[in-house]
Image (cartoon, one colour):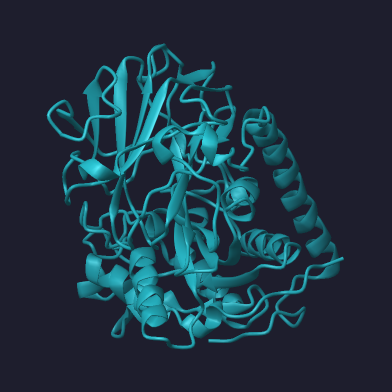
Length: 454
Protein backbone atom coordinates (compact mmCIF):
# COMPACT_ATOMS: atom_id res chain seq x y z
CA UNK A 1 0.00 0.00 0.00
CA UNK A 2 1.94 3.05 -1.19
CA UNK A 3 1.61 6.40 0.52
CA UNK A 4 3.53 9.62 -0.07
CA UNK A 5 4.71 11.38 3.10
CA UNK A 6 4.17 15.14 3.20
CA UNK A 7 3.19 18.00 5.49
CA UNK A 8 -0.56 18.07 4.76
CA UNK A 9 -3.55 18.40 7.03
CA UNK A 10 -3.56 16.86 10.46
CA UNK A 11 -0.23 18.41 11.53
CA UNK A 12 -0.54 20.41 14.77
CA UNK A 13 -0.39 24.23 14.71
CA UNK A 14 3.05 25.82 14.47
CA UNK A 15 3.54 26.53 18.19
CA UNK A 16 2.32 23.10 19.16
CA UNK A 17 4.63 21.50 16.60
CA UNK A 18 7.57 23.47 17.96
CA UNK A 19 6.81 22.32 21.50
CA UNK A 20 6.47 18.70 20.41
CA UNK A 21 9.69 18.88 18.43
CA UNK A 22 11.48 20.28 21.48
CA UNK A 23 10.15 17.46 23.68
CA UNK A 24 11.16 14.77 21.20
CA UNK A 25 14.58 16.37 20.68
CA UNK A 26 15.15 16.44 24.44
CA UNK A 27 14.17 12.77 24.77
CA UNK A 28 16.53 11.79 21.95
CA UNK A 29 19.40 13.88 23.30
CA UNK A 30 19.16 12.53 26.85
CA UNK A 31 18.68 8.92 25.74
CA UNK A 32 21.46 9.10 23.18
CA UNK A 33 23.87 10.59 25.70
CA UNK A 34 23.16 7.84 28.21
CA UNK A 35 23.36 5.14 25.57
CA UNK A 36 26.49 6.50 23.92
CA UNK A 37 28.32 6.48 27.22
CA UNK A 38 27.27 2.92 27.90
CA UNK A 39 27.82 1.42 24.48
CA UNK A 40 31.04 3.12 23.44
CA UNK A 41 33.36 0.72 21.68
CA UNK A 42 37.02 0.27 22.52
CA UNK A 43 38.06 -0.36 18.94
CA UNK A 44 37.45 -4.08 19.20
CA UNK A 45 34.75 -4.07 16.56
CA UNK A 46 36.99 -4.04 13.51
CA UNK A 47 35.07 -6.15 11.01
CA UNK A 48 38.05 -6.75 8.68
CA UNK A 49 39.05 -10.42 8.90
CA UNK A 50 42.70 -11.26 9.28
CA UNK A 51 44.63 -13.10 6.58
CA UNK A 52 43.52 -16.70 6.19
CA UNK A 53 47.02 -18.01 6.86
CA UNK A 54 46.78 -16.92 10.47
CA UNK A 55 43.84 -19.17 11.26
CA UNK A 56 44.34 -22.86 12.12
CA UNK A 57 42.76 -25.54 9.94
CA UNK A 58 40.84 -23.09 7.78
CA UNK A 59 38.29 -22.32 10.50
CA UNK A 60 38.13 -18.69 9.43
CA UNK A 61 38.77 -17.00 6.15
CA UNK A 62 38.63 -13.61 4.45
CA UNK A 63 35.43 -12.53 2.79
CA UNK A 64 34.77 -13.78 -0.75
CA UNK A 65 32.03 -12.82 -3.18
CA UNK A 66 28.49 -12.16 -2.04
CA UNK A 67 26.87 -9.64 0.27
CA UNK A 68 27.05 -9.43 4.03
CA UNK A 69 23.51 -9.41 5.43
CA UNK A 70 21.83 -10.06 8.74
CA UNK A 71 20.73 -13.68 9.17
CA UNK A 72 19.47 -13.18 12.72
CA UNK A 73 19.59 -10.56 15.44
CA UNK A 74 18.11 -9.70 18.81
CA UNK A 75 18.21 -6.40 20.64
CA UNK A 76 20.03 -6.34 23.96
CA UNK A 77 17.04 -5.61 26.17
CA UNK A 78 18.15 -5.51 29.79
CA UNK A 79 20.48 -6.71 32.52
CA UNK A 80 19.50 -10.24 33.54
CA UNK A 81 18.22 -10.34 37.15
CA UNK A 82 20.31 -12.41 39.54
CA UNK A 83 23.52 -12.14 37.53
CA UNK A 84 24.85 -8.95 39.13
CA UNK A 85 27.78 -10.67 40.88
CA UNK A 86 28.95 -13.68 38.90
CA UNK A 87 27.38 -13.29 35.48
CA UNK A 88 27.77 -16.60 33.64
CA UNK A 89 31.23 -17.36 35.06
CA UNK A 90 32.25 -20.99 34.72
CA UNK A 91 29.41 -21.92 32.38
CA UNK A 92 29.11 -22.39 28.65
CA UNK A 93 26.22 -20.48 27.10
CA UNK A 94 24.93 -22.19 23.95
CA UNK A 95 22.53 -19.83 22.18
CA UNK A 96 20.28 -21.37 19.53
CA UNK A 97 19.28 -19.00 16.72
CA UNK A 98 17.40 -19.48 13.45
CA UNK A 99 19.04 -18.37 10.21
CA UNK A 100 16.63 -16.37 8.07
CA UNK A 101 18.96 -16.49 5.06
CA UNK A 102 21.75 -18.77 3.88
CA UNK A 103 25.42 -17.96 3.50
CA UNK A 104 28.91 -19.34 2.94
CA UNK A 105 30.64 -17.63 5.89
CA UNK A 106 29.49 -16.14 9.18
CA UNK A 107 30.42 -13.73 11.93
CA UNK A 108 28.76 -12.86 15.23
CA UNK A 109 28.35 -9.86 17.52
CA UNK A 110 28.67 -10.20 21.30
CA UNK A 111 27.44 -7.45 23.62
CA UNK A 112 28.35 -6.45 27.16
CA UNK A 113 26.04 -3.45 27.07
CA UNK A 114 24.63 -3.99 30.55
CA UNK A 115 27.83 -5.29 32.14
CA UNK A 116 29.42 -3.27 34.93
CA UNK A 117 32.84 -4.84 34.41
CA UNK A 118 34.74 -6.34 31.46
CA UNK A 119 33.45 -9.61 30.04
CA UNK A 120 36.26 -12.07 29.31
CA UNK A 121 35.39 -14.74 26.73
CA UNK A 122 38.16 -17.32 26.46
CA UNK A 123 36.48 -19.58 23.92
CA UNK A 124 33.59 -19.23 21.48
CA UNK A 125 32.28 -21.49 18.74
CA UNK A 126 29.70 -21.71 15.99
CA UNK A 127 28.07 -24.83 14.53
CA UNK A 128 24.89 -26.06 12.92
CA UNK A 129 22.43 -27.74 15.26
CA UNK A 130 22.00 -31.48 14.71
CA UNK A 131 18.24 -31.00 14.71
CA UNK A 132 15.43 -28.98 16.25
CA UNK A 133 15.25 -28.78 20.03
CA UNK A 134 18.78 -29.99 20.78
CA UNK A 135 22.13 -28.61 21.91
CA UNK A 136 23.94 -31.20 19.80
CA UNK A 137 25.88 -30.02 16.75
CA UNK A 138 26.58 -31.47 13.35
CA UNK A 139 30.14 -32.60 14.12
CA UNK A 140 31.90 -31.44 10.97
CA UNK A 141 30.40 -27.94 11.21
CA UNK A 142 31.94 -27.04 14.59
CA UNK A 143 34.17 -23.97 14.19
CA UNK A 144 36.20 -22.12 16.76
CA UNK A 145 35.52 -18.38 16.63
CA UNK A 146 38.34 -15.87 16.89
CA UNK A 147 38.56 -12.14 17.51
CA UNK A 148 41.40 -10.44 15.65
CA UNK A 149 43.02 -13.83 15.40
CA UNK A 150 42.73 -14.75 19.08
CA UNK A 151 40.25 -17.14 20.68
CA UNK A 152 40.17 -14.83 23.71
CA UNK A 153 38.51 -11.43 23.81
CA UNK A 154 37.75 -8.92 26.56
CA UNK A 155 34.61 -6.86 25.99
CA UNK A 156 34.55 -3.69 28.11
CA UNK A 157 31.51 -2.76 30.14
CA UNK A 158 29.02 -1.19 27.76
CA UNK A 159 30.88 -2.45 24.68
CA UNK A 160 30.48 -5.02 21.96
CA UNK A 161 32.75 -6.99 19.63
CA UNK A 162 32.39 -8.57 16.20
CA UNK A 163 34.14 -11.87 15.55
CA UNK A 164 36.45 -12.70 12.68
CA UNK A 165 34.82 -14.38 9.72
CA UNK A 166 34.30 -18.13 10.12
CA UNK A 167 34.15 -20.40 7.11
CA UNK A 168 30.88 -22.27 7.65
CA UNK A 169 28.02 -22.97 5.25
CA UNK A 170 24.79 -21.81 6.88
CA UNK A 171 21.65 -22.98 5.02
CA UNK A 172 18.45 -20.96 5.06
CA UNK A 173 16.26 -22.11 7.94
CA UNK A 174 19.06 -23.81 9.87
CA UNK A 175 19.31 -23.61 13.64
CA UNK A 176 22.75 -22.29 14.51
CA UNK A 177 24.56 -22.88 17.81
CA UNK A 178 26.73 -20.04 19.09
CA UNK A 179 28.54 -20.92 22.31
CA UNK A 180 30.60 -18.72 24.62
CA UNK A 181 32.59 -19.48 27.76
CA UNK A 182 33.72 -17.00 30.38
CA UNK A 183 35.79 -18.26 33.34
CA UNK A 184 35.58 -15.13 35.51
CA UNK A 185 32.74 -13.05 37.00
CA UNK A 186 31.62 -10.19 34.78
CA UNK A 187 28.63 -8.62 36.49
CA UNK A 188 25.15 -8.28 34.96
CA UNK A 189 24.53 -10.37 31.86
CA UNK A 190 23.25 -8.59 28.75
CA UNK A 191 20.26 -10.62 27.60
CA UNK A 192 17.09 -10.80 25.53
CA UNK A 193 14.38 -12.36 27.71
CA UNK A 194 11.62 -13.17 25.18
CA UNK A 195 13.55 -15.44 22.83
CA UNK A 196 10.72 -17.90 22.03
CA UNK A 197 13.63 -20.28 21.49
CA UNK A 198 15.22 -22.80 23.86
CA UNK A 199 18.93 -22.37 24.44
CA UNK A 200 21.25 -24.28 26.78
CA UNK A 201 23.81 -23.99 29.59
CA UNK A 202 26.60 -26.34 30.64
CA UNK A 203 29.08 -26.33 33.51
CA UNK A 204 32.68 -25.72 32.47
CA UNK A 205 34.14 -25.00 29.05
CA UNK A 206 32.05 -27.07 26.65
CA UNK A 207 32.25 -24.73 23.68
CA UNK A 208 33.73 -27.42 21.42
CA UNK A 209 31.36 -30.22 22.47
CA UNK A 210 29.30 -31.57 19.60
CA UNK A 211 27.08 -33.68 21.86
CA UNK A 212 24.34 -32.36 24.10
CA UNK A 213 25.36 -34.45 27.11
CA UNK A 214 26.83 -31.59 29.14
CA UNK A 215 24.06 -29.15 28.28
CA UNK A 216 21.65 -30.17 30.99
CA UNK A 217 20.08 -26.77 31.65
CA UNK A 218 17.53 -25.30 29.26
CA UNK A 219 16.95 -21.56 29.16
CA UNK A 220 14.39 -19.30 27.40
CA UNK A 221 16.88 -16.43 27.00
CA UNK A 222 19.52 -15.28 24.55
CA UNK A 223 22.64 -14.05 26.34
CA UNK A 224 25.47 -11.84 25.02
CA UNK A 225 24.77 -12.73 21.36
CA UNK A 226 23.06 -9.94 19.43
CA UNK A 227 23.72 -10.68 15.75
CA UNK A 228 24.60 -13.39 13.25
CA UNK A 229 25.66 -12.10 9.83
CA UNK A 230 26.36 -14.25 6.80
CA UNK A 231 28.07 -13.76 3.47
CA UNK A 232 25.17 -14.54 1.19
CA UNK A 233 24.33 -15.09 -2.45
CA UNK A 234 20.63 -15.28 -1.56
CA UNK A 235 20.22 -11.68 -0.40
CA UNK A 236 21.85 -8.33 -1.05
CA UNK A 237 20.32 -6.33 1.77
CA UNK A 238 18.60 -6.49 5.14
CA UNK A 239 15.11 -5.52 6.30
CA UNK A 240 15.04 -4.47 9.96
CA UNK A 241 11.77 -4.98 11.83
CA UNK A 242 11.67 -2.65 14.83
CA UNK A 243 8.86 -3.18 17.31
CA UNK A 244 7.59 -4.33 20.67
CA UNK A 245 6.30 -7.68 21.95
CA UNK A 246 4.19 -8.17 18.83
CA UNK A 247 7.36 -8.13 16.74
CA UNK A 248 9.24 -10.06 19.45
CA UNK A 249 6.68 -12.84 18.90
CA UNK A 250 5.25 -12.91 22.42
CA UNK A 251 2.82 -15.81 22.79
CA UNK A 252 3.93 -17.61 19.63
CA UNK A 253 4.87 -21.27 19.78
CA UNK A 254 8.34 -21.81 21.26
CA UNK A 255 11.00 -23.23 18.91
CA UNK A 256 8.61 -22.96 15.95
CA UNK A 257 9.77 -19.63 14.44
CA UNK A 258 6.22 -18.37 14.04
CA UNK A 259 6.91 -14.67 14.52
CA UNK A 260 5.55 -12.47 11.74
CA UNK A 261 9.13 -11.64 10.77
CA UNK A 262 9.87 -15.34 10.23
CA UNK A 263 6.90 -15.56 7.85
CA UNK A 264 8.09 -12.48 5.96
CA UNK A 265 11.61 -13.93 5.67
CA UNK A 266 10.17 -17.17 4.29
CA UNK A 267 8.17 -15.27 1.67
CA UNK A 268 11.25 -13.34 0.55
CA UNK A 269 13.28 -16.56 0.40
CA UNK A 270 10.63 -18.30 -1.70
CA UNK A 271 10.24 -15.33 -4.02
CA UNK A 272 13.99 -15.21 -4.64
CA UNK A 273 14.09 -18.96 -5.31
CA UNK A 274 11.25 -18.70 -7.81
CA UNK A 275 12.88 -15.82 -9.64
CA UNK A 276 10.06 -13.41 -8.90
CA UNK A 277 10.72 -9.68 -9.03
CA UNK A 278 10.87 -9.25 -5.28
CA UNK A 279 13.60 -7.63 -3.21
CA UNK A 280 16.46 -10.01 -2.38
CA UNK A 281 16.48 -9.20 1.31
CA UNK A 282 16.93 -10.97 4.61
CA UNK A 283 14.90 -9.98 7.69
CA UNK A 284 16.17 -9.34 11.21
CA UNK A 285 14.00 -8.88 14.27
CA UNK A 286 14.68 -5.95 16.61
CA UNK A 287 11.57 -6.33 18.73
CA UNK A 288 11.70 -5.78 22.49
CA UNK A 289 8.68 -6.78 24.55
CA UNK A 290 7.14 -3.77 26.27
CA UNK A 291 9.00 -1.31 24.05
CA UNK A 292 7.72 2.25 23.61
CA UNK A 293 8.56 5.01 21.19
CA UNK A 294 9.05 7.76 23.75
CA UNK A 295 10.07 6.37 27.13
CA UNK A 296 12.68 3.94 28.46
CA UNK A 297 12.69 2.06 31.72
CA UNK A 298 15.10 2.81 34.56
CA UNK A 299 18.82 2.09 34.61
CA UNK A 300 22.09 3.34 33.12
CA UNK A 301 21.97 2.16 30.42
CA UNK A 302 18.21 1.93 30.53
CA UNK A 303 16.50 -1.42 30.49
CA UNK A 304 14.17 -1.61 27.50
CA UNK A 305 15.41 1.58 25.84
CA UNK A 306 12.87 3.64 23.92
CA UNK A 307 12.55 3.39 20.17
CA UNK A 308 14.00 6.88 19.83
CA UNK A 309 17.09 6.06 21.88
CA UNK A 310 17.84 2.65 20.32
CA UNK A 311 17.17 3.48 16.68
CA UNK A 312 20.84 4.15 15.88
CA UNK A 313 21.97 0.84 17.40
CA UNK A 314 19.12 -1.43 16.34
CA UNK A 315 18.40 -0.08 12.87
CA UNK A 316 21.10 2.17 11.47
CA UNK A 317 23.96 -0.04 12.67
CA UNK A 318 22.52 -3.30 11.34
CA UNK A 319 24.45 -4.97 8.54
CA UNK A 320 23.60 -3.72 5.05
CA UNK A 321 20.18 -2.41 6.08
CA UNK A 322 17.96 -1.21 3.22
CA UNK A 323 14.46 -0.92 4.73
CA UNK A 324 13.01 -0.55 8.21
CA UNK A 325 9.53 -1.72 9.20
CA UNK A 326 8.29 0.11 12.32
CA UNK A 327 5.62 -1.53 14.47
CA UNK A 328 5.46 0.62 17.59
CA UNK A 329 2.94 2.70 19.50
CA UNK A 330 0.60 0.39 21.37
CA UNK A 331 2.62 0.46 24.60
CA UNK A 332 2.82 4.25 24.49
CA UNK A 333 -0.98 4.29 24.36
CA UNK A 334 -1.45 1.64 27.05
CA UNK A 335 1.26 2.40 29.59
CA UNK A 336 3.17 5.64 29.09
CA UNK A 337 2.81 8.55 31.53
CA UNK A 338 2.15 12.17 30.57
CA UNK A 339 3.94 11.96 27.19
CA UNK A 340 1.34 9.48 25.93
CA UNK A 341 -0.76 11.69 23.70
CA UNK A 342 -1.61 11.46 20.06
CA UNK A 343 0.65 14.25 18.82
CA UNK A 344 3.72 13.21 20.81
CA UNK A 345 3.47 9.63 19.55
CA UNK A 346 3.12 10.82 15.96
CA UNK A 347 6.03 13.24 16.41
CA UNK A 348 8.13 10.33 17.68
CA UNK A 349 7.24 8.17 14.68
CA UNK A 350 8.02 11.01 12.28
CA UNK A 351 11.36 11.51 13.99
CA UNK A 352 12.24 7.84 13.39
CA UNK A 353 11.25 8.23 9.73
CA UNK A 354 13.37 11.35 9.35
CA UNK A 355 16.39 9.63 10.89
CA UNK A 356 15.99 6.70 8.50
CA UNK A 357 15.68 9.06 5.55
CA UNK A 358 18.91 10.79 6.59
CA UNK A 359 20.60 7.45 5.88
CA UNK A 360 18.69 6.80 2.66
CA UNK A 361 16.53 4.08 4.20
CA UNK A 362 12.93 3.48 3.22
CA UNK A 363 10.37 3.21 6.03
CA UNK A 364 7.29 1.00 6.07
CA UNK A 365 5.10 1.69 9.08
CA UNK A 366 2.31 -0.33 10.61
CA UNK A 367 -1.05 0.72 11.96
CA UNK A 368 -1.66 -0.12 15.63
CA UNK A 369 -3.71 -3.27 16.07
CA UNK A 370 -6.85 -3.56 18.25
CA UNK A 371 -6.66 -4.30 21.97
CA UNK A 372 -10.33 -4.37 22.94
CA UNK A 373 -10.79 -6.71 25.91
CA UNK A 374 -7.20 -6.25 27.11
CA UNK A 375 -6.97 -5.29 30.78
CA UNK A 376 -5.72 -1.74 30.04
CA UNK A 377 -8.38 -1.02 27.43
CA UNK A 378 -10.41 2.16 27.80
CA UNK A 379 -12.60 4.02 25.30
CA UNK A 380 -10.19 6.97 25.51
CA UNK A 381 -7.22 4.79 24.54
CA UNK A 382 -9.23 3.28 21.72
CA UNK A 383 -10.02 6.78 20.43
CA UNK A 384 -6.32 7.65 20.52
CA UNK A 385 -5.47 4.47 18.60
CA UNK A 386 -8.00 5.34 15.91
CA UNK A 387 -6.68 8.90 15.61
CA UNK A 388 -3.07 7.72 15.27
CA UNK A 389 -4.04 5.08 12.72
CA UNK A 390 -5.91 7.68 10.71
CA UNK A 391 -2.79 9.82 10.48
CA UNK A 392 -0.61 6.81 9.60
CA UNK A 393 -3.00 5.82 6.80
CA UNK A 394 -2.94 9.38 5.46
CA UNK A 395 0.67 8.92 4.33
CA UNK A 396 2.03 11.76 6.45
CA UNK A 397 4.12 9.54 8.76
CA UNK A 398 5.81 6.76 6.74
CA UNK A 399 6.76 6.08 3.12
CA UNK A 400 4.46 3.06 2.88
CA UNK A 401 1.89 1.55 5.22
CA UNK A 402 1.11 -2.03 6.19
CA UNK A 403 -2.36 -2.05 7.70
CA UNK A 404 -2.06 -4.69 10.43
CA UNK A 405 -5.14 -3.21 12.13
CA UNK A 406 -7.35 -3.85 9.11
CA UNK A 407 -5.83 -7.29 8.51
CA UNK A 408 -6.39 -8.66 12.04
CA UNK A 409 -9.40 -6.83 13.48
CA UNK A 410 -12.78 -8.43 14.04
CA UNK A 411 -15.10 -7.34 11.24
CA UNK A 412 -18.04 -7.25 13.66
CA UNK A 413 -16.17 -5.44 16.47
CA UNK A 414 -13.17 -3.56 15.07
CA UNK A 415 -12.03 -2.67 18.59
CA UNK A 416 -10.94 -6.30 19.00
CA UNK A 417 -8.68 -8.81 17.29
CA UNK A 418 -10.52 -11.44 15.28
CA UNK A 419 -11.04 -14.49 17.47
CA UNK A 420 -8.72 -16.87 15.64
CA UNK A 421 -6.04 -14.18 15.38
CA UNK A 422 -6.13 -13.56 19.16
CA UNK A 423 -3.66 -15.40 21.44
CA UNK A 424 -6.21 -15.06 24.24
CA UNK A 425 -5.01 -11.92 26.00
CA UNK A 426 -6.69 -9.65 23.41
CA UNK A 427 -3.43 -7.83 22.65
CA UNK A 428 -0.97 -10.33 21.16
CA UNK A 429 -1.78 -12.32 18.02
CA UNK A 430 -1.99 -16.10 17.89
CA UNK A 431 0.34 -18.03 15.61
CA UNK A 432 -2.35 -17.69 12.94
CA UNK A 433 -2.45 -13.96 13.56
CA UNK A 434 1.33 -13.65 13.26
CA UNK A 435 1.17 -15.62 10.02
CA UNK A 436 -1.45 -13.18 8.72
CA UNK A 437 0.84 -10.25 9.57
CA UNK A 438 3.75 -11.81 7.70
CA UNK A 439 1.56 -12.48 4.67
CA UNK A 440 -0.18 -9.11 4.41
CA UNK A 441 2.95 -6.97 4.05
CA UNK A 442 3.33 -6.22 0.32
CA UNK A 443 6.81 -7.26 -0.85
CA UNK A 444 6.73 -4.46 -3.42
CA UNK A 445 6.61 -1.96 -0.56
CA UNK A 446 10.11 -3.08 0.41
CA UNK A 447 11.46 -1.89 -2.93
CA UNK A 448 13.04 1.47 -3.53
CA UNK A 449 15.07 3.82 -1.42
CA UNK A 450 15.04 7.38 -0.18
CA UNK A 451 17.72 9.87 -1.31
CA UNK A 452 20.14 10.73 1.49
CA UNK A 453 19.29 14.16 2.82
CA UNK A 454 22.05 16.76 2.62
